[in-house]
View 1 (spheres, rainbow, N blue to C red):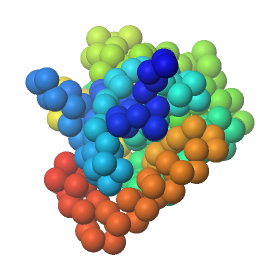
View 2 (cartoon, rainbow, N blue to C red):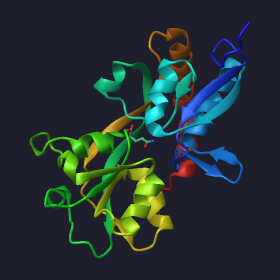
View 3 (tube, helix red, strand yellow):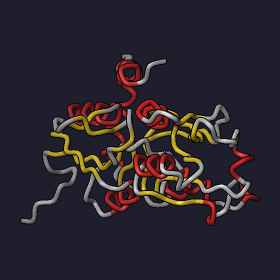
Length: 233
Ligand code: GLN
């Protein structure tokens, strides 16, 4: 019989994009981060080996719907549109979309982004979706947005002046600004959202196991200690 990496094998495949510190990143030869540790706890509870499938962010939902991966942990925000394609677990963290600009920028908040600025985002993320929306809906219009395959390349575009600002989730924003002198995060937060784990639509067996593990990790303080390990208050 054909071997497929699905939940009925002894391996649990997690789809992610490991350029999203501190949720997932590559450290030497190893995948590290909050999502990796949560995924490991889920695999442990199921008696399975965890495998990390590190792909572009916008390939993650297709990997789940086609069964190439069992679940996604990718700092992924729950949205109504995504819910049409995948099922989400209970939320395990919150994210906030923030704006990164060069230290000497004249941009002080979202309103300034409307004035003929170019905004860098990560392809297929909520930051991309919100910013590309029409001004009437709180966005800046597609013409003002350039999408990059990941956060690191959006930051590089900001450093080289190809874009005036980057809109990205707050925790990776902090990590990118710490590594890239000359950049700052604006105080005005743009949008707050819930992170959750996605599984193939109708895979209630895996979803129940995930929610059960998340509930345990929340109740016994493990989730908070994982978060505290990577995010300094
Ligand atoms: N939270 C954002 C989203 O779900 C970004 C996630 C990411 O880039 N890994 O779209």
